[in-house]
Image 1: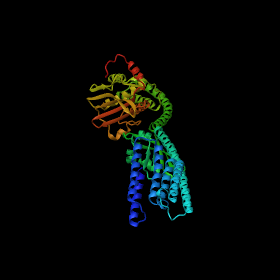
Image 2: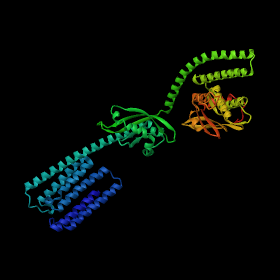
Image 3: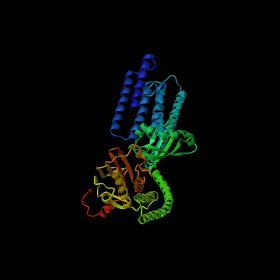
Amino acid sequence: MTSRVVLVVFLLSSLLFFQYRYHIFAVQLAHLSYFAGTVFGLTALYWYFLRWQLSSTLLAYLQISGDILLTTWLVTLTGGIDSSFSIIYHITIISASILFARRGGYYAASLTSIFYGGLLDIQYYNALGFSRSSNYSAGQVLFLLFVNIVSFYAVAFLSGYLSERLRRTRQELQEKSSDFEDLRALQNHILRSVGSGIVTMDMQGRITSWNNAAETITGYKLDEIREKWNAVFGESFKKVFGHTEDMRAGPIRFEGTIVKRNDVPAILGFTASLLKDEQEQVGGIILTFQDITRLVHMEDRLRRQERLALVGSLAAGIAHEIRNPLASLSGSIQMLREELMLSDDNKNLMDIVLRETDRLNTIITEFLDYARPKTTTKVPLSLGSLVQETVALFKNSKEYQVAIDVDVHVEYDAGIQGDPSRIRQVFWNLLNNAAQAIRGHGRITIASREESINDQEYISVTIADTGIGIAPENLATIFAPFFTTKSDGTGLGLAIVYRIVEDHNGMIDVQSMLGRGTTFTLRLPVCDQSTDAQQAIALFPGKEKKYL
């Protein structure tokens, strides 16, 4: 409707311009005014019908018919057979074809042929006051009518054909768009559901996609990783772009270390391959990765246990061969010491031999405890009761000094799973080390709290002393076997502690300042089920207080 008004205004303005400028047409201004008023009136009527939701098909046919009548009127005003505005019929036929395909085109062509042919007949026979044109004979009029009718149907056929092609193309495009949307939705579902991180990059290293698993593994969203990818994946990405030629033969696999958003380091297993289109043109790189930190640690632990098992087997044989003569030597010295009349110096020498014999036997025993894997029987335990028993034994041992205060703040309802004897050995060794580090009066504090690390719940126990502390250069090696700063130490106590904690899937670390003291932090996983914790607490009835 808007286009009709614009077209009429343009045509009438052009008609007036050429009429008064070049005197080509002889149309009365009143007739043009009537024509323009009729067009505007019909347009208002069409708009009224549209607002009242008249049938769109009926309204469209009504407007097509009205356009043909208006065009016939304009052709009549501008000379009939001599008018140049008969070409507007073709515009009406094309618009009908666009709306109703070939059916609408043929309808408009037929109605146009009737009105245009009737107009030429009326004009030729001077009917209804029309004057006959002197420029055309009867044959010419017939020929002109034939040519125009053929052109009307030709335009209807071609425009209808193109309209149907356009409709089919639009329908196919919609179907393909729907399929594409379904495919894209499926792709998004796959990318969201897959457990591996997937990232795509162009050949300049710019990240173009980043799935949910990648966000979960690293903690970074797409917008954030685009800004920080060099800091997070710098070395790994350099390794990828340094082997693009190798990727032409197939995917490459490697491992890399990153720091997650929560500043926790992680080991990732990467698979990189070239991203190609249908023409096998390389458009970028696709990188998949998984967090294999636990797997790598498990492999390291298994390899270490295999080595220790081998060393343990060897050590057991050697220890057996050493212990037999060592026992004979110790027994013989004790008998000689009792039966012989020895001077004080000789007695002291024999005491040294016996003491060193016992020390050598202790070293062999501790080495076997460290090197030979033991079968760990894990049962539900109450951590508070274990600490209480160990502290009670410690206070009655020769290592305990009266000048040392022991403060314990461990929850009774802290339930863990472990081997009771081996867990006691951990606390015993740590208490002994703390007592030996204190000079004169001092304090040992044991406290517990719950901690969550990487979605795993732990009971964290700290054993802090006010002793002499550990030198910074020794902190990195205190858990190494046979490392000791004591003149009479074996260097296996903390190594055994580390081994036991590791066998219980726990963690241990240390902080120390010279002259201020040392704090060991022990983390052990809580019971997997609440029933285990209840069972652990039930092992020690009568404990009503929450803290020791």
